[in-house]
Length: 253
Image (cartoon, rainbow, N blue to C red; front, side, top):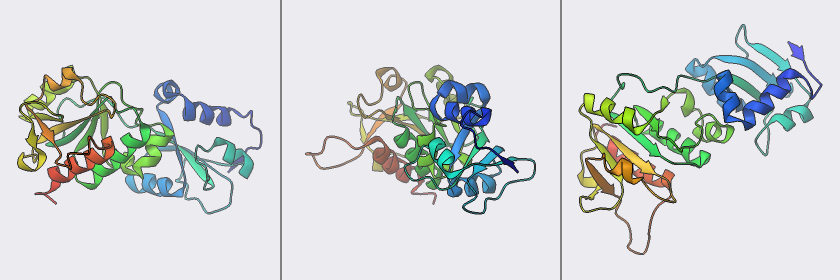
């Protein structure tokens, strides 16, 4: 086990860059996770770890061949992106984000311009809980492997695949499987989400500010609405996604 005390150590600098820069995460193919819960989930899911950094305050399972580094508690705190660091963080390999040639499944949630990393992570976690086959991110979404997104997934990022793609790539992939594309929006063909067969489809959730973009709506077979009191205008994106995901799973779980 290594011991590092210097804030100028290359590993310390690497972690800081991975915490703050999407470009660094993409260039290195790594992301940072914080806390024993995520470490447990990563190990259970077979994620590839490259380093585990801890302050020695608690036992940390470190797989054979993975770099183990002990640092002072104040140094670890300076590297943590949480308000209450839990004594351990680790570097993990990013899974492949490219959309596969053939989608593995029949139920997908698509995010269009959802920029809040907490929302993206929460939706990812909910999609995993309700049995979706994958999460698809169109341009303009938050980085799926930013620290805040990863933290909000509560480990779902290690279990459920997420892919980044364009609408031009997504539509043919869905058509090849005969999967309709729906969106949560209001227009003339909008139907109650409870009356639409969502057992084989992809559903788009838009950003809270502008909703689903028009170019995406133009490629949708229909739109869905979540019934609510007339005095309520809309739902948070993560909440709306949860309702849709439950309806997608209702006949299957």
